[in-house]
Length: 83
Image (cartoon, rainbow, N blue to C red; front, side, top):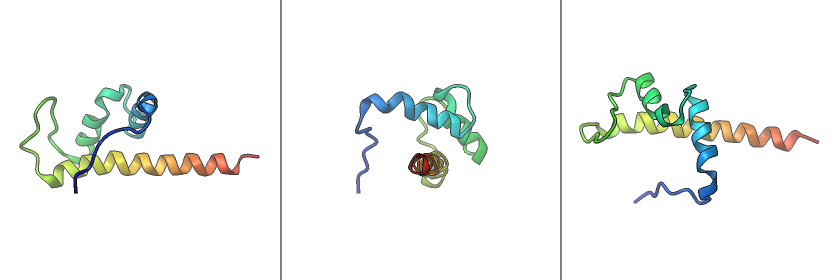
């Protein structure tokens, strides 16, 4: 099954990048994935990363995606409990 990494609301790109940076506690959203890769021990570098195994790529994507989803759910729950 092909997955598309396309944001449905393009105006949300900046907010999502900021959330990604916050998740891995990076100062710059552009280096967030490299910080996540370093945390899980994956040798991710700028440019082509064809040498990575599926498992390694999944570790980086799972670290970012899973954490972002948890944070978004937490934010939504907080908004629901506000009067």
